[in-house]
Image 1 (tube, rainbow, N blue to C red):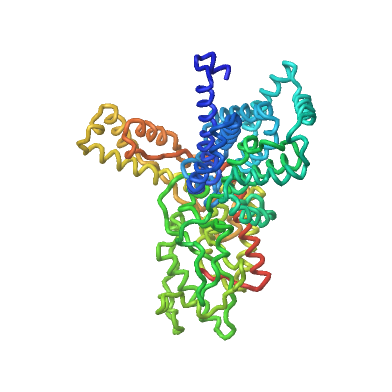
Image 2 (cartoon, rainbow, N blue to C red):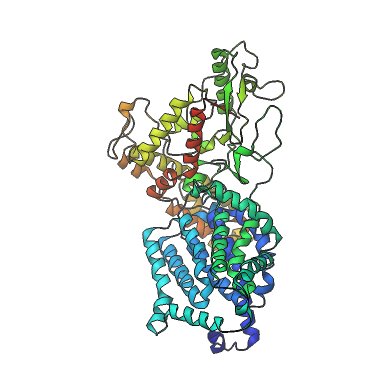
Length: 616
């Protein structure tokens, strides 16, 4: 307020405009946080609830709206420091462009600015201390680097240090405020129980009936995620953190009266819980159970896809870049047992034919297309074993197996099929039906390989795969820019003839397309598998650690040209060429995958119960 008056904007009108602007800007800040941590779809679903929240009435009438803006933007800046990571629809990679890595200077500035704003909160309002649960939840999901955390700590310390050095001791201020409150009349004379329950009713007025309707789902999600906290949807975790801070204030009795304004900074984050998490009907969506199909509830968790339904390609999933969509969504494993009377030879032929149909039907991830296609379907006298679906459009295997009707009977194959931790040859072989006696060996191989990667082995192969996948993504992103440049060269539009556009257009067209190193192959013989980072990989020795690093394509020149192009063209002509993370970030995102761990636990349970997996 003093700064406004010093700038010539004194008076209540300007002060009210400033407070309302700060409070309403919190909608943008919360949306940015959700987009960064949970993906653009989740942010878009939450936006109408944030805009229409009943708390808007108090945002327009109380100074606490300013505190809301400070808290929201401090949290949003903290979220911007998030490291790329894949987590299905709510993953950073699934968030698309928003989840790309910030430059180190920008991430440091965001951490410092976020710390400065968050550190000021307890000095703006004593009731803002429990709000720290929300940025703490952001930190758990964002996993910033240590130097980013150090800058955050520096920012957090600025305001407390300034007040302390000028003679203000925060605990004494809290104690003096409490003493003044207790000797006053009015709300201080009412019972603790009155405010304990009455304030929660006021919170309901602030957040609205949509949040009340969503609270049971939020609690169920938290209870189910207790065993794997990293699998809890980001929006749910943020709303739960804000609710926890509110309950601490309520139970402690620190805030009793006037919580309709004091709790506004918490209420807007709790509103996020009202956003629907279920996707529109489509592949992988829950649907009505038919007599011959198992319940699909198991392929969704609290309205969000099970581990792995998501990304179009490996690049979108782990590297965090955009690449052409590929039709891999909707392929499930369903627990089953073969019918007792079915001969083994019939099952093996049906499984072989099914794998050939999937491999030849364009349904597998694009990063597996370089592998040798499976052999053609075998001829067999069994009904439906000719490689074609049955007359009713169903897979013939369905007539020869018994489906597990339990509530947790399915998982998405993409959890394994899109994981760069596993060799591409193994991931291709995952897209098939696994008979009960085959599954234990394959599960053991996947589990042991994951443990070996976490133990620091197989780095040459992973470096070679990183070079291939990042270059493949870059090539996919670069080609649209070349096509736009070619179109501009033949266009009669005014913008295409501007000299500055012609200059960048010619630079784009003369830049050689990014080369894509060949995908590495996984040796079939254990003796040929490298166990140390310096061991050459492959028969020609071209995939050693040094060779893979040399083959990694430098994306910076291409991203730089794309940025210059975007500055000079109309909005509809813009493209996106993004910088991939470095190898260590790539590897950390692939190895630290709670969805893969969840799927492996589910597979172990299937093996323990004697089930196989039906590809659906």
